[in-house]
Image (cartoon, rainbow, N blue to C red; front, side):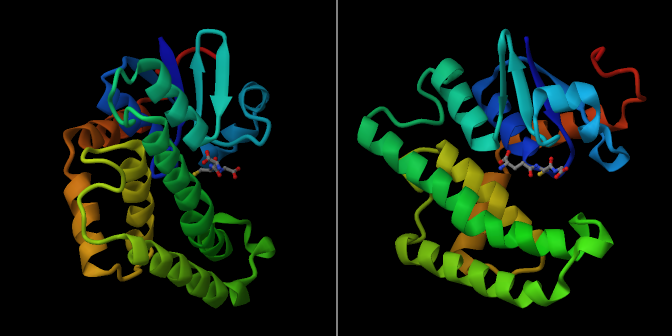
Length: 215
Ligand SMILES: N[C@@H](CCC(=O)N[C@@H](CS)C(=O)NCC(=O)O)C(=O)O
């Protein structure tokens, strides 16, 4: 069975959501990043940077949320979450790269310099530049987004899953999204698989330590 190593409200939700969309069985291992568990030897053996998400699937250990979700859809998707032509799959990859490099990075920089980094490492003066960069990426997205329900093809793909998740970060960081994008985000957030993934994350987090699979 697949094991997902994750932490609530992090990028591991993308993986849990993908697994739920695909209907693939998995166990969720909560990595207590807030207690330094990411830097433990067992976790550093899974991810050299001590981060989440990571999955184990048989002999394969894989990190990086986009690579993991892409693998899962290739391996277990059976037509779900990926279009059926190379050209359309390339467009999904384009949006995955756009979301994880252009859109997410300014948000993540802002989060790091606001609360995520140790206080002594934060540079608060960078925050307005992050906001400016995020707005530029959002403007670029808007130039291509015509209020459609899906980014590629006529059904929900990984591109929509990643964009919805990342727009959720923006929304929780108090950015005001253009109405059409906020409508798109809210619509996809209502997918039952997203609710199941969030519930799964919460159950794993609330479980007393020792309920995780053995290290
Ligand atoms: N590019 C990576 C980013 C992974 C990442 O930064 N994960 C965060 C949680 S969202 C983490 O584990 N942070 C712990 C740390 O930096 O020590 C991905 O998409 O998987």
